[in-house]
Image 1 (cartoon, rainbow, N blue to C red):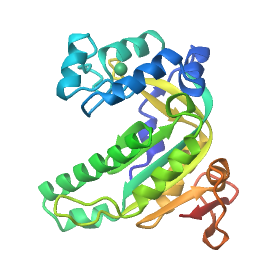
Image 2: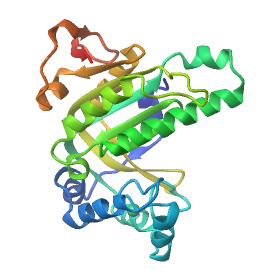
Image 3: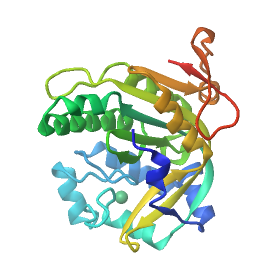
Length: 269
Ligand SMILES: [Zn+2]
C-alpha cells in the first residue's frame, strides 16, 4: 500500500467557508441532496463525485447539453461542481465514517506477471471496489495505486453512515472481487468513524482540485487497513458502536499502530 499520509501531503487542505462545507458534508444541502438522488437514477457511470451527474450513456449526453459535462481539468467533477469548488475553497471538521481497501501481495504478483495482467487486475479491483462503494452511498475520496479510500460524510451519505461504511467493509473483504481471469483478488480493509477535516484541496498551481479528508482518524483508518490480512476487515470499536453492531469479543484485537501512542482496539470482521 502507498502511504496515504505521504500522498496526501502533496495537497494543501484549504480553510474557510466552514459553515458552507459543514452544510454540504455534515448536514446536507437540500437542493444538492435532491440533485444527487435524481442524478443517480440516470445512466450511467462514471459520475460527478459531488452531484452524481452521469458522464456516460444517455444521461451523460443530457448533462453535457445542460452544461454539466465532465470537467477537463478535474475529471472527478462536472463543470458546475468544479466551478462551485473553485469559488468556495475551504472545509470543515465533521464526524464521518471512512475506509481504506487495498490489494494484498501486489508486489509478489507483479514480480511474476506481465505488466498487462498487472494493469488489468488493478483495473478490475478499482472497478468492483468503486461499484460496491457507490452502491452503498460512499464518497470516493481517492485512488492511490492499488488502494481505494472512501468516506461516508453524513450530508452526502445520510445519518446511517456508520452502517453503510461497515456493510461496505464486509462486502469488500468477503472475497467478492475477481480479476480479468476470474481469480480472487485478496484485499484487506480498515474502517473507522470519527471527527475528520474534509476539505477542498488543490495542486499544480490550483489547476487540479479535489475534496479530501485529513486528520489523525484518517491515519488510523489507513493503519488499520495496513494491518488487515487478506479477506479481513479490521473495524474500529468506534465504528461498530456507531453502527449498533455487537462487539465480537473472540475477534477483538489490541493493535499497536505506527504514529499512535496507545493501542487501538479493533475487531476482525
Ligand atoms: Zn457535479
